[in-house]
Image 1 (cartoon, rainbow, N blue to C red):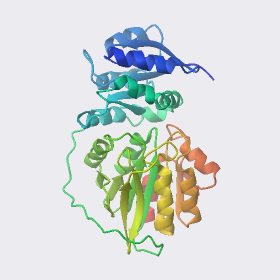
Image 2 (tube, rainbow, N blue to C red):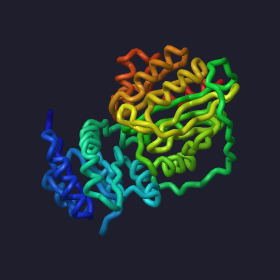
Image 3 (cartoon, rainbow, N blue to C red):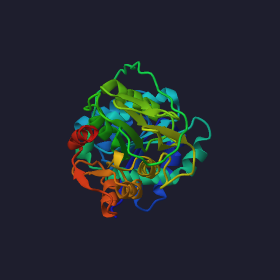
Image 4 (cartoon, rainbow, N blue to C red):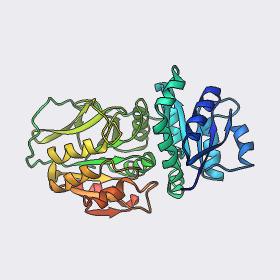
Length: 356
């Protein structure tokens, strides 16, 4: 395996020191430099270009978003955002994802050194995943900054109910994605009409960031997009995104669907997990569901999609050419849970047709 060369850009000396030590501990990763701000990083990159950049957002002289946009326009390079875990900074971090960042690594304001040490496996995995992304697909979806306009759509809350699988008049779409998914979901949701069937989504994303991500998509889309809350109704013209750090299940009440947002152990190293959502859809919706697995690293969702297919659901995987990372779709196909493989641009029409 080729050694992955990494550049760390963060104004915190502690972060630079700890991240460098953690990454260098892996035999397949080498931190070639650590810079206190983007201007220093630019000078260092003239000497040796990194395979992956670990980038802070709030820094002196040039912020991380400006640097990221400059990078993606001039020489696209995989970037992992290393951001403080605060709701205030979440919107900025979502803009970074929209600008082409591959993933988010969160860091707290307190206990930083211990937190990064405890999260070393996630950091190393994120760097390795980033080194393998399809940059052509990633940069095709780069978006400008957005001022979100909130929609005034009332939420409908339904009571707890049974999960029996009976034929219903409504159809539901469940989607699962990870690395590269923020851009892929934007490409799909922003083209859907208000008549699209109800959609329930798991995007691997840390706690605090899914609300800002949902608000961004809501401002861009004709359909209503929101971070899911427990008992939210799944309805036509609405997409619910699982909150970071919590699982989301599809449930049925009479002829209608709603979501249950719950805590629980990590599944496939993730919470929320695509498998948890897909398995609940197999149980609660059966043939009334369309399961779509999209770009992402790992195998989360593969077994759940197979359960959906076995329960009579329609199942779709995003093709390799249009994926930033063809991990999750590849594993689902290998397991035999996929009926149709399509490009990203074909997914919106599949959703619309399914809802008719």
